[in-house]
Length: 627
Image 1 (cartoon, one colour):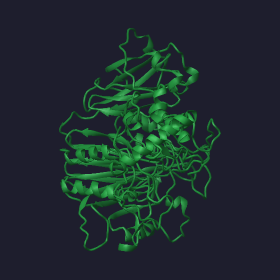
Image 2 (cartoon, one colour):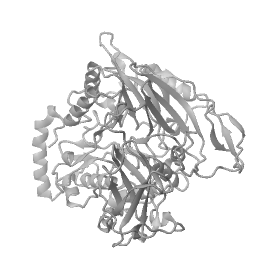
Image 3 (spheres, rainbow, N blue to C red):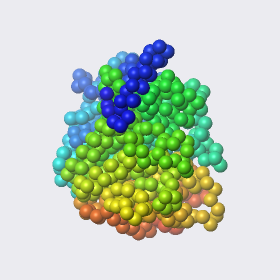
Image 4 (cartoon, rainbow, N blue to C red):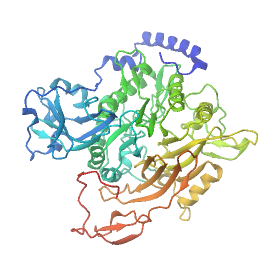
């Protein structure tokens, strides 16, 4: 069994034995691993050589949406392959029909470099008709490709994918679009349409790809569910509980045409946060089961084990993610491993952690202001084994940039000073201060050259400095470690959605208030939705935040650059860059006419397109520069 919290291990083991005895007596499932082990959880499949060309034949007039309603996606890149994902519509499913695929270096598929067949036995209702095709070892390093599926005479849309550079390869640049928190009921996905047209190398999703709610629980208290975003779960519950519930959420989210555009055009590096299962969920050592604090039976292990198993199974089915899953393992922390590192040649290493499956509960329950247990030495978010792996990976990395893909904010958000300092967000690393100090001190002592942390979860944009400690006492040493770059939510509620700020309280006023108590933060924006692009070169790292209007259900949703910072190679320094006034994007005026708008938000002349109305949807042709 994976060791998690060594300080409390003996007591936890005793408690687990007692719990398992009670489980056996009560007839409760013995754990998530046992539940998943009894099911046929979808595994990555490999292709078979084609024995004839019939499965590749298709009529170009056939509608791909009728056969592939969730379209296609790629993820889990390696230096010689990717995972290709799709789902067959149940109405189009034929039990004896194989699925063909083709990969080419050109969009016309004149130069096909790989093709094959997924056997009919690998497509079934048991896995909700999903397919995760693993092509590791089949492609060239640092390659860009076009791909498609063909099923029963119908071709999918054409997607693009790319592989990683070879290990240690000389790489000059890397561009990552960083995404998080996309509550379907709280807005539209114009951000994905812009990403489809952006010249980024990979999409890095920090988690909360879906939200488990169907009743608008996480929307703004002053607003309703957005038009056309209503969801009704098969169980009738307001929060997903059954496997059908979770699968339904993924089919709804993945059917969005704007989201599909983004996933079709870029390879995804995905992880999870909490809403893929339940808000603020954590692992209860005593019961050896998850806790789901938002659910009525969230402390009942029989219930939470079943809900978590359902959420995990659906996530594995619907996300093209290269994680380790061992169906024969008897303990969940051995059965499922999301933490991993991804090498981009000699330029950058992305170190991805799992900050849900191993975490302890909140330090003081629902208590916030007077909590004094945030710095308890035995509290863990990562667990012992993952923490040791993380520190070993980071401190021995030889790449120019060491990048932590971290789910929740590492730096504090506090009020007050010294003895009166109060941390407010215990679901973040503020609730695990001793472990955070261990991580930061170890990284500082190892003199890691360029340590950059990418974060999500908080639905705002932040650029700040990581330190070994954040205590204001004069006798406490606090050394700089690296920088943290947080991406805003795509749609999920932020402070401006929740709080009705007075008219004279703008972005700058709120940011100034936060920064006055948190000098380690260089930039804060609580008002805007969108995404961030983080670019690495041998000379610097650049963090650029884009606002995208979530209220417009169109590829013409307004986009503008709101912040940009540069971190020079070898320095822990956030240099503010000018917002690009020439960063034009397309907006739509009150009459539905397309107009150009510059990076400062000033509207210019009407667009000089052949049509004066909104532009056509992106076609995905070629690798275009970010507009």
